[in-house]
Image: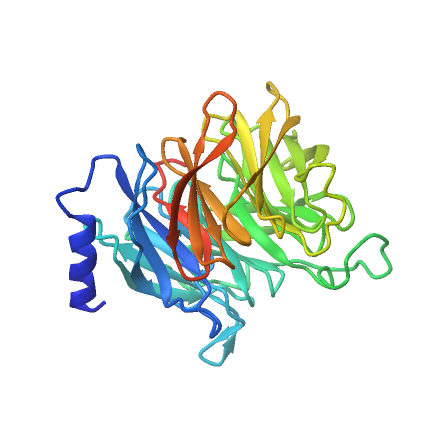
Length: 393
């Protein structure tokens, strides 16, 4: 990275006014010709006041649409949501080292994900492997990490394979959206609390595929279990409760959230499904869901509605998966593709892809309701909000 830019970032992040409650937050973006983005941006967020600093370019990258941090090391991982690289098919996942004084990112390694259009990335709780979901390719990749957090090449064949291709056979099935569900579309990948299974929401299959994970060998087993959702639901992202026994899946196409509870087998049992929109919203043309999150205190669930440009707010009822709908809060940002709850659980940040803004909301700790703080910053085409993880999460 240019030394001038690094110095500028350092001046902002290490200014005399920096407070103890301020933490870096990174924004993944789309860098298509229609946007002004150059890669990944960084800002300072005050977890006590909810204020955001002006964002600065942290690292150049191509379509870094999703980010995930290492649980221990100063490393950030980004997918390059592209169809091919250097004349070879498939997307890329890139490892960046974080300058802990400035938030600037230095690229350390990059490897193929084995499939087109990777749109989601995660790191297992022990920091041994990185996993990516290839939306365009309908596949999942698992790559080993070195002791320094650098990526090793993906192994795609043989007994040590870290690659699984999802299969599609839904011809003639009623209720599905053939424009979006014409083939497998792996949209997210999450590791089970115990670290032995991988949950992949496949929008094209209307299923959550459960794969066995061997972190020591960085291998994935074929589908161990398949959680089937309603035809045309379009499962997109999964949010696991802190107790590890419950989870909720946001369904992009039919704008719902499905409750899931752990099973004796390595997967989930499907409970009830509820809408992310008020009943008076009857015309849902052009609307879709995007992100979902469970509050770290385990009492509330939030989901984003694109087109309606709102956040659905839910209260978790007791120890069940039942959700009480609290209503929606306007995001004050267009096309809320992603959001994240800040460390400490007091604030929530929304990435408005179409408005080129990030907005901040305060979370009422008693009711779970959101309140716009008035803070909004400009970020070009933001589609992911990422904080550093706490160890073991």
